[in-house]
Amino acid sequence: MLATCLLLLFSGATAVDPLSKTITVFHVNPLREGVIPVNMDTADLRGDMFFDVHSKTLPIQCAVPPPSIYSRIDCSNPEVVASDLVITKLQLNMRPSDSFGEYGRCNLCNATGVDPFSRLPCTPHEYFCTCGTYFEPYACNDIAAIGAENINVSFGGFPKCSWETWVTGPWQCWGFASVSKFGGMWYSTTRAGWCDAPGADPATCTWRATVDKIVNKSCSDDIVHQAVEDYDAEHDACFSTCPGPVTGSKRNTSSVCWIYCFYQTVMGKETIMPGGKARPNVGMPLAELDAAFLKPFLPESQGGCPDLALRAPAELLTRKDRARPNWPGATKLQNRIYEMYAEKQMVAAKSAALF
Image (cartoon, rainbow, N blue to C red; front, top):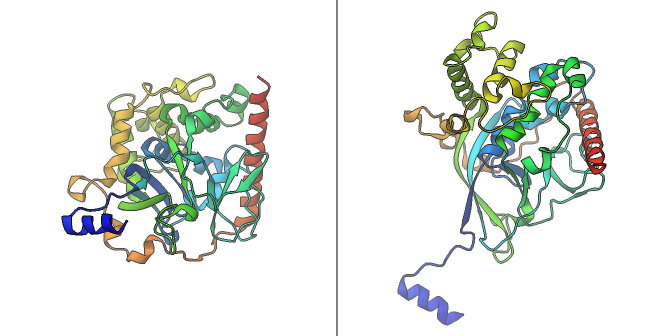
């Protein structure tokens, strides 16, 4: 071993980085929680697009009392509704020989110290990952392997929107169906496998992440929304039928008409109706959507968003501010929403097992 080290030293050779396999991933979360995905989930481009597109119905969902069983989890999810949301483009490095492990559903624990999704105990306001089925979840923050989930495989087989659902709220047929258009991968990375953690063992750690760019989600949204509106203007002109100014700098993303036109443009008219099936080649072409979601990460001179990493202190990359939720009844609502979402997942899983 000593001879090898001396040979490398005097020959000028450099050691090969064992984490030589690189995956480009994206992550949306509150900036105050840091952007290095320690005990967090990330996604490839298409997985990130699904996460974003499926949540455009929130202004309708969250205004419907009582809380609906249909994905109302997002109404209090800090990674969806926090005021300081950012999107980070990262390079996730891993060993080429490593296999992916089970995907961990990583979320911020609420103030009660009980993960609302799994009902397992967790540390308030810390990220907490759970693996396993919805019937038998278990904590998996201590699993070092990078988790991976093909979301089209996991969610694409869920029951399609029915007329019974549509008549109670057409928007329930819009967002989640986009999984069949985008597909994509989600990844989970824990502190147990993080090679830059204090005291990490280089021989057993599994991942490292480097930041390419951090952008405000509001800036990214403006770019994506403008691209969708521009495409619609050249095709169906749906947005032009909405009352009042609803596009460009005056767009109202809470308008039911704007939300409907967004999904009609992205997904296609028939796709967002009962019986419709999302397909990559229906609606706005995937290549144009890809370009829209990537544009925020281009240099500002090419129309991209300002890079927050150039202005933020270095410690913000992994800083953990213990800010408490600042909206009334957040914990109680989040608990109930997670419970209903889990119930829905269990019903769907049981239904699938019967066929």
